Image (cartoon, rainbow, N blue to C red; front, side):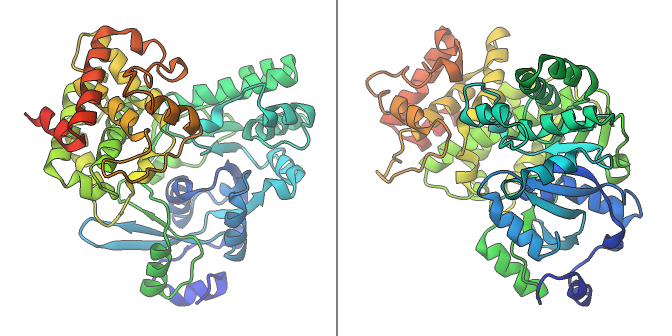
Length: 482
């Protein structure tokens, strides 16, 4: 069976399909960065509302900017925007459904003006983003930013498109859409506002002031582990349901979305789908970034050096579980404010359970990628807060050391490690100097700031790095268990 609207209904006994008439949907959201996470998270929430008879004017128009997005265009166009979402439980149970909330996909390089006109459409009231941590850089010296400033009607960057879309709305007397970041960044809405208004000021100072004054950028916290789709996942969909899906999505059962309620043009009734609408996202965001995201970093480099390739296998190792829980309890938790309605002990228990889910088959490589964007935002703030309060930092410093050892690009058996990072060359070069100069890696001030000036951090970091070099990753972890 191919993935067509007319044939999906025939497989409804084996695979849940949309209960609403997709022909009656209209797009109210433009989303940049249609990847696995967006399709397992925001698009899923919209689909829940539509199945309940809500939000039919809040369908999603996806936009891809990068060359790699061309394949997503081809798959979603062939499948009418439909795809399979497979929720995998630790006991082997699978819940699967077809998501229908994505009704259009535009590949921006094909027709930039089509994307800009969609943004200027009065029906679009929200523009959402999952463009990764590195997507919020607005460097005037960047060739892409220079291009967008020179040719605003033919942009390449996310904020080039968003700014020109806002400018057209302003010119036409239309109210601005809300810009909603769904990326794993501290105060992601504030960061989005800063990036967008900075770009707009580069184009026109008056436009920049208007964006900062009139456009709303709600902060949000999002959470759902969504590993990269594999060929085995595609084969699994076909075997279970008789459907050939070019790009299904696999995810864990857990999902969470905490969102500030700042939508002048309206929004879907998100709370009806389980979204927590709050006045202040900060406590939830810090909890997630410092317990979940930073724990992923605490796990991944040590795990790779010890020979693990899958997340659940490493976390099921009691040595790793003890190290993670020690980091959570003794170093991350003391830096967190009270989180309304959340039992932190139960949350930490749930994290270990989630990481241990063997059905997700999340990869260590995914967690190790783009560390220079992740570590400074997720782990280093924990270290700085603990230094300020004279708290425990040994495990956090050891995580930084494990990243430095990993970045040497060779594991303990002499096998190459593929370091995936936009700063790969400088990271690897610094890491390979550290056997002679132990502070070479943390001396990169554009990553670590003045952390290398702190004697207490340096003592803990050097000790862990020395142990990694002399005794290996497992023995280093065992030293914490003792």
